[in-house]
Image 1: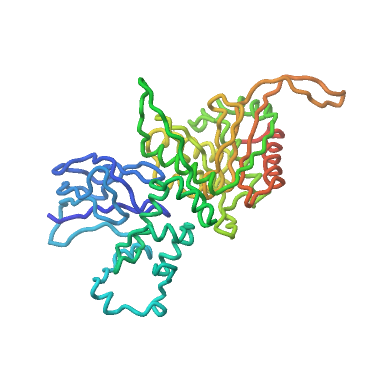
Image 2 (image 1 turned 60 degrees about the horizontal axis):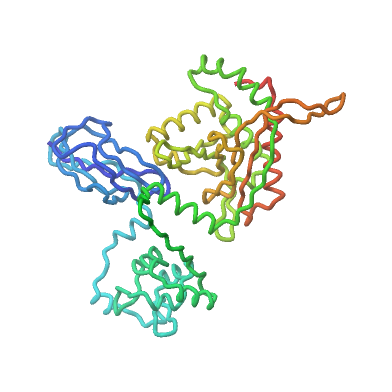
Length: 440
């Protein structure tokens, strides 16, 4: 028998760790190649990890609720084979951060013996004999941590100096233990914004207290963060989508019989959005400090409600390269896997623009929050029959039409009203003037 180390696999760009939700096997169980053995959660999506080999689970190294890093051993299997060699999964190239974390840290005595004078070491002195390394200073500057706040941090480094771990821990817990007086004082110094003070909640007799689950907490943090980062502006438009409704009614049975797939309205909406992005590519951007990153690919996020009431946004990659038929299949596949917890981490990454179909809940319109680091999001309202004025060659007439509101929220740092409004108008035009002879 040979020993096989089961590693936490790479889960896509930017995902460096995952939380163990539950093991689907126990020590002593025999598993086959591609069997799912453990359920994990990242800040993007929950998923299962299969074993690449058949064998017997000898040792589980990461327990429920523990965090494992990509490439870390989470279990050991006995597999059939000869010799004493240890079999391992191929590892992804390590990032600079992983390599840095693996470098052995010198002891305090070694640091003392090699310590340079302050002006040669690159450390930065503030008033009150507070010394910061360039890395810590950089973090403090980026997080807008005032000198008074730095003075309050108890350093764990040599001679009480603040380490990277100290300042990151402070950032993670910042504001939790600040008093109102400290917040106001910091604001008066124009060094940090006052931390918001939550209004105390009174729990009355009979009230039920429900703890947020992990996904809800991630969503809450992301939404608050987006509002903090992006100044939101929202534009609205009402579109006559009668042609779209008639075209789909004519095509849906044909499409389902031919492809075995449902034809929803979403592929049509995505097609119109993609065309508008091609007209106005500066909607398909992200902001990095004072730089604008213009995205080459058009990847459309699709906000999807889950059975447990939470929300996830799977991504249609390279949507501009897909036909209507291809979009329908991709959308149906992602929606099905989202609702059945079958999404892979990479399925929720890389979106450059997002659509939220609030009309699926019967809502006429909404003002969605921009998913960072995107700069815009479109909300599609319910399609409703209404009397509308039509212009004809014989004059204006009133007719029953299929009308729908759309709302476009965009980041006013880089998207002005003219760009945001013209983009929305182009989506409107593509839908309102839908060609009844469009093939799928």
